[in-house]
Amino acid sequence: MTAEELDDDAIAAAFVAGPSDVGLRLAYERWGGLVLALALRAMDRADAEDVVQQTFVSAWRSRDRYDADAGPLGAWIVRIARRRIADHFRVASVTRERAVDPTDALDRAERAHPIDVPDAVAGSILVEETLAGMDEPQRTIVRLAVLEDLPASVIADRLELPVGTVKSHLSRTLRRLRDRWEGAHAAHPA
Image (tube, rainbow, N blue to C red; front, top):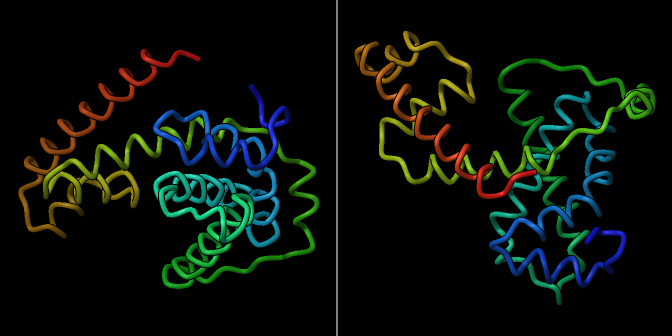
């Protein structure tokens, strides 16, 4: 079943029902393009794709807070997207100065290539769930290594741990993530 075959209320019901990712895929099919278009107005393609992913991960993780009486699911997702766009610029302003030329947003949208964001979103959810189940310092080590792309030596200095300990934690954690990833893909082949 595709989003084109369903009305917005049916997609919202599937989205809220969880835990299957069918509702997530339907919501992405229906509103992913809109979220991407909003993000492309403000930033480059790579950052816009990140915002789309963050938006749908946030929506999926907080789907129990969606209230159909307060408005349609699409509007709720757009509100989340606007917050993710604002978060992006808040973080960017702290780490670097950035100039955005809004006049080339249309050119970027026309050059856009479709991506498989639902799989990326599902992958991010899997990573976040795995990280949430970890103890410290493994969680922090993986976040610094993967999300901030820091080398083991910098992480070791920051956390005041031996480099070997950081590498060991990172190796075990990444192996656990890989095993969960492979298990999830074996259970739900494409």
